[in-house]
Length: 483
Image (tube, rainbow, N blue to C red; front, top):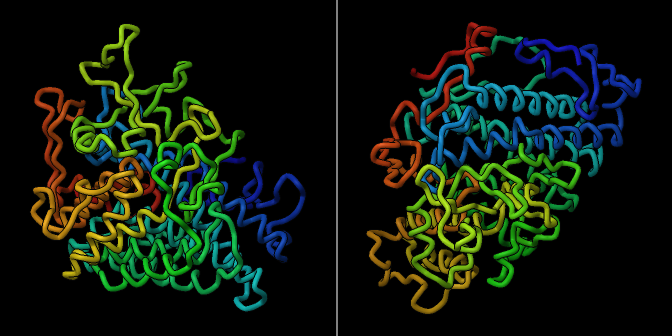
C-alpha cells in the first residue's frame, strides 16, 4: 500500500483486500465501485470490515485500553509497550496505542460508510442485513472511541468533548470533535436502526439484532437511563437464543470457539491463522507450560482476595499460579505470578482466543444494576444470584435483600459481581467512573513501586487518553484533552 499519513486518506482502500493502492483499485482488478454494486460484493466488503476489527491495532488495543486502567490487573515491571502508560495513567500525546486505535477505528468506520452509502434500505432482507451490520459496527466503534477519549457521560456530557462523528468517506475533512452527548445520541440512534434492519440469523461472529439490543442495554446504563437499560436487556433475554454457561462449563468457557458457546452474543472470531503468538492479547497475561507468552501482567492481589472468598467459585479457574520446581510461588519483581487465562487456550493454542464483546452474563448484570438504581432490590439480587449460581455458588454463598454480606447497598452488590464476572473483559474502569467512584489501587504493582497505592478520582483529567498529536497536527479543528 502506498502510505500517507493524512488522517483518513489511508482509509480509502477497498476494505476486503489485503493489498491495495490509494487509487482504490485492489489487486484482483475490480474497482471499488464495481464491488459495491451487488450483495455478493457488499458482503465481501462487510467481511473486510470485520477483518479490520480483528486487526491487532484495534482488538489488542481496545481490550487493553478498556481494562488496564482498572484494579483487576497488576503490571509487574516497566515495559516499552504503551500498555504501561495506559495502566499507570501517564498518558502522552505521542502514545503508540492511542494513534494505532484512533486510525484503525476510523478505517473501520470509513469502511462501514462505504457499504452504508452503497445500499438503499428496503431493497431486500439480505441487503438490509448487510446495511444493519455495518451501521452496528460503526456505532460500536464510535462507542469504543468515546469511552477512550471522552469523559464519562455523568460528567457534563453536553459540553465535554467526545470524538469526531464520521458518517462519510471523505479524507481530511477537518471535522471537530462532537460532544460526549452527541456521540452517545448518535450511537443510540445507530443501534436502534441496525436492530430493525438485521433480521437474518447469523452466528456470534457477526452483528445481530440481539447484539444491537445488548449493546443498547450497556450504552443506556452508561447514560444512567435505567428504564431503557432494563428494556433492551429484556429484549435480548426474550429471544431465548442464548443460555448461561453451567458451573461445569465455566472453567473451559474461554477455550471454546465463540460459535460453540451458547452464552456469547458477539465476539471477534479468531481462528488458528489469526494466532499472533507473542503479540496476542493473552500473551501479556499468560506464559504456557511450553514457555509461550510474556506473562508479565497478573491478577491483582485485591482481585485474588475477592474471588478467593468462596472456594467453590468456578471463576477462580481463570487464574493460574506459576510455581517453581519446588512448588513455591514464583514471583517477578516481588509480585506473585498469577496468570489470567481468559484470552488463552482456544483449541489448545496458548495464545489464541476470540475476545468476547457481548455475552448473556453481562446482560443480566446490566439489568441488575439498573434494577438496583430504580429501587427494585429483589430483582437486582435475583439477577446477581443467577450469575453466582452460574459460577457454582449456592445456599449461603448467594445474596438476599436481608443479607448483603457486609456490603453497604444493593448497588455495591451488583458492582462487585460485575467485577467478579466481567473481570479482564474491559468493564471495570467504566463501572467505577460512570458511578462517580474513584479507582483505588492498594496492592503490589508498578503503578506505585514504593507503596503500591494509587487513587484516581472519577473526575481526574487522566481518566481519558489524549488525542494523538499526529492527528492534531493534521486537523486544526481537533482539540486536545486537558494535559
